[in-house]
Amino acid sequence: MRQPNEIDFWRGFALVTIFVNHIPGIVFERFTFRNVAISDSAELFVFLAGWALRKLVDGPAKPLSARYLILRLEGRAFTVYLAQLVIAQLAIALLAGASLLLDAPFLLDWNNASAIFADPVRAHLGLVALTFQLGYFDILPLYVALMLVSPLIALSYRHARAALLPVSLAIWAFALAFGVNLPTWPVEGAWFFDPLAWQLIFVLGFLLAGEDGIGGLARRYRKPIGWIALPIVLLGVAAARIDFDPSPIALPEPKLFFVFDKTFLSPARLLSSLAIVAVFAGSFGAISRALPRLGAFLSLLGRNSLNVFCAGSLLSLAGQVFRFAYGGDVVSDAFIVMFGLIVMGAAAWASEWRERLRAKTSKEPAA
Image (cartoon, rainbow, N blue to C red):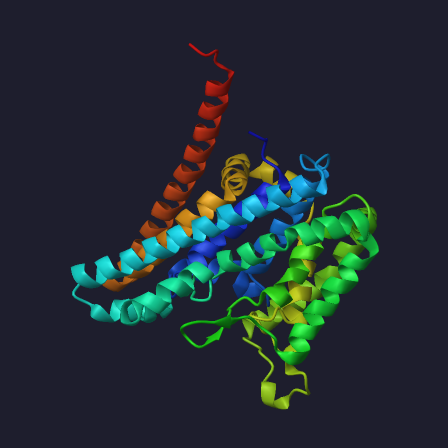
């Protein structure tokens, strides 16, 4: 397994903060960075997913032909898709079991789940098609959509590198200008994370991970960019602390360019997330020297991000139910967070233990 590194560390950090933030009202959510920024860990998670794609394309997948590159990336998309189906069904079972155990039928309405019990035939079709999404379980559908189009990104990088960022920016601007999003079904609405908008930060992560182009430029001028980004981060801190959010009524059209909208990844959120990356890039070395165990633990989570994300999503829902059943205070919330971190760490350790066992078995001679 690879050694702790900056990307795995920040991916682990994002996974922990997503776990905490998905338990509304928990005491510790006030200490996550969404309280001191316009953006949150969702942007960081998607940005790092794009970064990981570039490392794959420039690394193990570099010698692959277009055909095998497509197969590899679509295989990853299918793996994430299966993970989404499994955790969605487990979440539904958890809500159903809690409603029976606690004699609280209204739990069946939590997190947009009511359709699965009121209209199970169409809702299950929607689950399979990703058009029906539970609340707090809507990041992986975005990831599936991004991985489905990742071969286009990778092949554009190979054969039309100069067009990749302009096309991505144009799609993002189109989505914001006209409010274009994917519809949900059977519950009427739209995706919480619009893939047409969020693909931009995925592509930016992909491009900035490279040694050439804007990635190389960012590395050469990392310190000046960091100083330029610092005031933007501080403005985000101020906006978050005073709970500033522009009123859509007072804004010109198209309003999505000016509001702090998460669904469409508005410019303010995008700029905030990129500024945070610029300010904290390169800080892993100092953090790991000062807090080596923290660095190793978060890197462990980040190395096994899909399994840990699935575990964390279910733990967040379990934490919501626990707080409903037993109330929320500092002690119970601390128990939820500690238990969640232990289980997420165990999921990561088990994932690596399985890989080590598989590698050891493959080296042993056949009997």
